[in-house]
Image 1 (cartoon, helix red, strand yellow):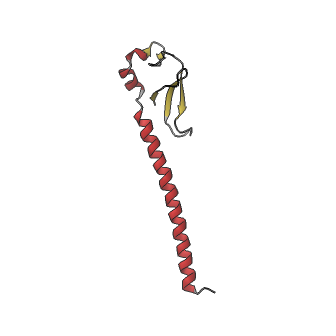
Image 2 (tube, helix red, strand yellow):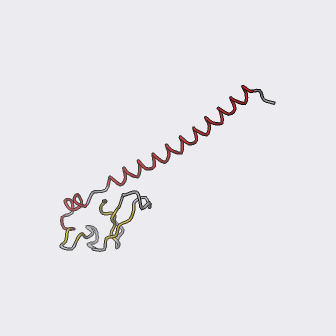
Image 3 (cartoon, one colour):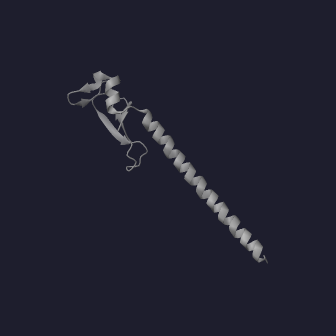
Length: 100
């Protein structure tokens, strides 16, 4: 049978291991979010897209600079509807055009 000291040390050790695992999970999730944010920020905004590709601006909106299609769709970058990171792609050639 374990003595009081050994029982307390085992409880502290188990608590420390659990805390370490939670910290690792938090760090991994936070790192993923930061990586996603960096990639999302690497795409231009609509205004930046228009300044680089002025021919893409039309009376009715925007068209793809690659194939000239006016069918643009948006999606949530991470798949989470609450992330607030939208990317816009050409529906015809799947080129990522800009973010918002």
